[in-house]
Image (cartoon, rainbow, N blue to C red; front, top):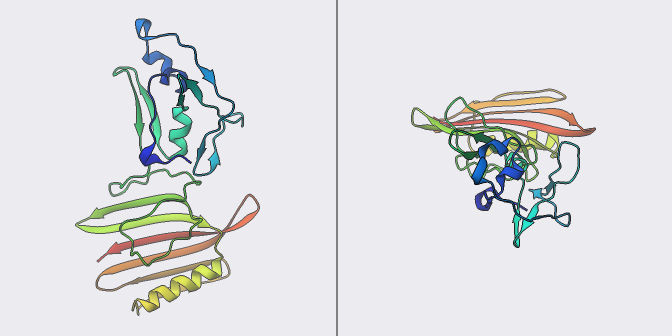
Length: 219
């Protein structure tokens, strides 16, 4: 399993692995090598096998006992973007799972289940199988805030009861609550923090999921 924090991408043959990157290397900067397309290896990001646009398994290249990965596919699987800068003769990778400035929302692949906020209270549970669609963590006027949106297989009713109990146990008294068959929401605050929690029932690939949005901030 590939982790962003320790992923090393060898740039020696990026011309082979980044679409459109051939223009980065011109004339004498190109060197012919003998490498092997390694059909014995696949590339997984957090347990998901990477495939090309035709649905075929992506295979790395092995050269002098070093394995080189298809950088665009791996980076995009990790929520990053890849651009080619011909003027600077560089391939630029911008990470996706980072703190953001107010008003921005990085794109996070639905396969990513490892996002963890350093701002949310540590006893507030995010389901283990959560797949994030949005993640914003930043500060405004010196106050921390977090906005997350994810889907989970945890049931709608279970999450409703869990979040209601959490707010009650933490002394939130003036809770604006609403609930019907397929939606719920909580809106409350005290002297130190505010919460807006909403949930809906959604379907994906014939599977029923709970879609949750958390909006938390310091007061």
